[in-house]
Length: 69
Image (tube, rainbow, N blue to C red):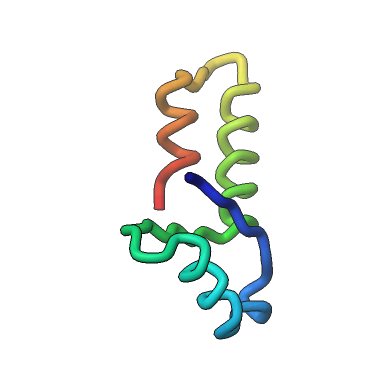
């Protein structure tokens, strides 16, 4: 099962953690947190670079840049 949450850091509280614990019970889970603004900046830089006639960005480089942490 996969669940995605989108919220601000100020919305994190004990009830959020409790809801995750209730949903996944005793299963192992992975929690990944990233800054949406940072991701948008990376995407913008990639698109700007790929728009230049003298340079291109491969699909692999594009996906790698999106998933860097």
